[in-house]
Length: 506
Ligand code: URA
Image (cartoon, rainbow, N blue to C red):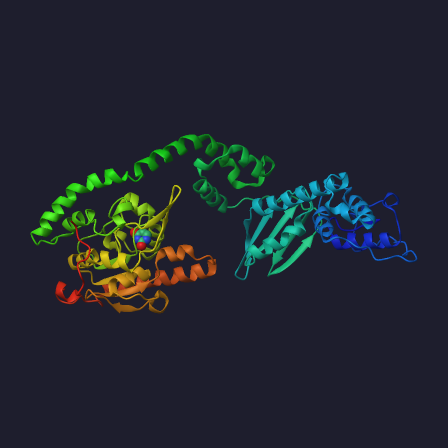
């Protein structure tokens, strides 16, 4: 029986069904493959169905196995499948009988094909080539699979790289997407001469995501066997990264220790002197006349329970007379350790956005509605917990005093907690985003997303759209203060705030 395609389940299934209906025992069938012109040949004559032939029955699991096994490069795959199909007609339980040598071989072949597909999806590296068609850039990749998996993996690439034109060339055929149309060929391709300037970019990216503390050389070699290295731009980095991993991991541990949270009793001892000083000044009726003093008082705040678990108060930072004040929610894990606001992942996103807009972070006063990190411990991890109304109310006193001393022209409120702290009212951010709102403090605030929200959005399209609005809002706030659109009310009267001093030092 001559098949024209290397890995076409439909073609093999039609041939096998005809042979089965004709009652042809497996030992009398010789399976072969024609590499000749696919369109010029007539299919092999199939014997007519025998009398009383009943349509073959096939367990679903067999079809799943066959779908993978036809892609295997073993020339005996078609006869093995036919023999199993033949035996299944008399013994349907064979499909679940794993000690059977034919079943074992089929399972091994299926596993090998699946692994090859996985490797192909992981290790294909596209290089850009000249000649866009419209707004679609063009890319080519070379890959050397063990089996005939090009057609099987092509839909994955078509979905993932739908917005570009590409070709994947392999010695076992090619796949290409042009203007959204997927085309396949079984003709072996020749290895093209590929390299482009994005290789440097890819290497930089790989080196930056390489985590020396997670390095397991054996697992890495199993996951990325050496035979794939020659087509991976990043492979040349691996020996040096592996060699330097021990030292880098030790450095990371060292740095982590420096950042680690001190034990509770050490924290209390460190706070005691601050607390005493703060109590004395407060007893004398003085409520911090400058930001440094306020920072020291805040460092000793123990009135609400959040101080018990947090490492330290994370007070605002920036120039004492900043025009724009940015109010976030509360410090996160990293901020709690560094003692500075917006130094973790959300802060990095904020920094990137500011840099894109040409706004200098050091010109802004950055602070939070709540000054202590609220979390629950899960093993070694500290999982962020949103502050509740009580936490926000307790901490508002510090924010109020910060606003009084900095006297910003405008506040940028990041997320719902900031809005609640500034207005005293719980509100959803979506309808307020991009709007100016009145605050309890006589300064107006422009509302936007919290950067952590952007980092959590699972859908990349939605995340990109939200990031664009976030950028737009920050740009707008910055423009408003520089054009003087936001004039602060003359003299902020603390009495007009009408807030209770519920968070104080003791
Ligand atoms: N999120 C915030 O709201 N503030 C920070 O300082 C860090 C993360």
